[in-house]
Length: 636
Ligand code: GLC
Image (cartoon, rainbow, N blue to C red; front, side):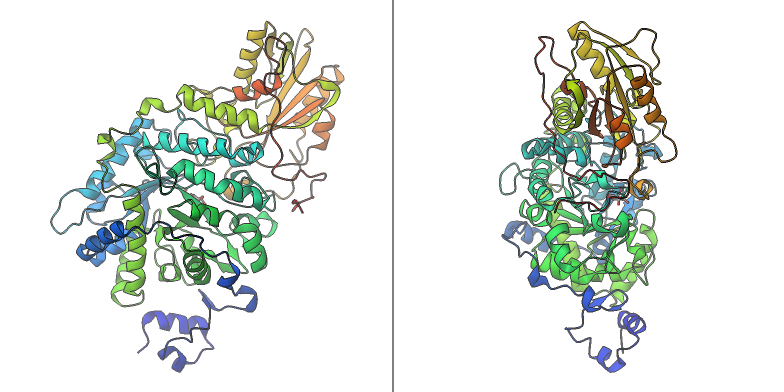
């Protein structure tokens, strides 16, 4: 009698004879979710980098896991593999649905308020934790793990230190700085009782039309590989040292496995029509260093390779990532992304777990998915051995994260206080990152660096707009609708200019439209992309402001008035801005600097003694196009 699963495969395969299925499929037939794979879809684990060292396997922890699993019911085991979003699950729900994890997705916040203050996050984390470990008859106490997207600092919270996005950090070429940004992010998260960040993204961005280009460090696999380990160590601590996952550190996530930045046309969640060799050489570059640094979780990508959705690709998740590359943490899915696997819905997808996913990000589908998955374990559709492996991996991460030893979030004494969010020391790291990330694209006639004694006009809609300078994944998912007063302690680029010029004895006037009564010595015009995230940032070409050249008009007006102009361009990617560059005397790629806008003036202005205060350091980690359609355009 073929099991339901085999019957599903029979339907999917069609061609394979029932006899073969009754005897189980020949091991050589590689399967994807919707049938046998073609040669172009076949992976060869021996062609991938082998694990260089065993990570995360600690005999003492494995023994604790054995003991715990022996006590767990099958309901509790299935529960561990499912994560629900706080917009749909309440702490009390964990009594009926023993989920292993919760998350706050892009637009989720405590009490449905994604602008909730830090204390509200700590209170919520504490509430969920206590329910998950409370003593109840028949209940095995297993702490829930709470994940958020702290992808450029603890960006859900406006009071936090919000770092430049990865595209800017890639331009710094400073591994130690990136480690420090990871450390600060982890500490500010730990202060709010949250134990897991879905970062760093290790995307190798090959087509800048992709709406997530700014989440990648570079187009160049060498740069991504150079940073991956440093950022993971900053967030988690150095693997093997006493620093590893001690209080003040959080669990990291290498994402999105694999080739999220390699899709056709840069379409988010699209298909990477590339060879296995390119997968390995380009897109896999950051994963071995991350695994070697002890990264505890890896997130599977929404996207697909050669038409196979990653969330259903057993060759990739099991044979390559866990087998050949030796990843011993757990694989978490993306936001209901399992529903894109043929034959699946967000409520019902044994294929993903069987393929090697360990935890479903079942944001609003967790209740039904739990029931269906439990039934599929009981009827054998999902082998118990696979469930046990997934649970073991999840518990392994929770033990390494110290969750079983820590008290509830509000009782944790050895973590930074909430008042340290956005502390001067933390913001200083952000300010340094901003200054080191700026890339000078043009400086005609030596207009830069500016004198702080000058009469400065600041213009453009990005000059006094902290939300615009921070970009996506900031307070809200898209990073839109954010007011300056929602970032207490942050500085806009204008704030930084004012401080630099005040120190030097000059004067500053701000007019968004560049109007002035008495002619300034120089104008700083800050403009660029409006915030966006994910597929909402996908574009057809790299032309800046197609159809509306208002910023170019502003630059031209100032030029026509004979005012030397410094353009400060805010963007999540290189764009075609030749007209804007030609209309400026100096042009600075400032990317998405985050909360420390004062880092820009640190580089634009001499200090009050007239010396260079901080020279330009940033180097492009993405190729800059000469035309609006010159993409993909990559080194080599
Ligand atoms: C999103 C993103 C992923 C993020 C997750 C949780 O769709 O793809 O990067 O971590 O959902 O917000």
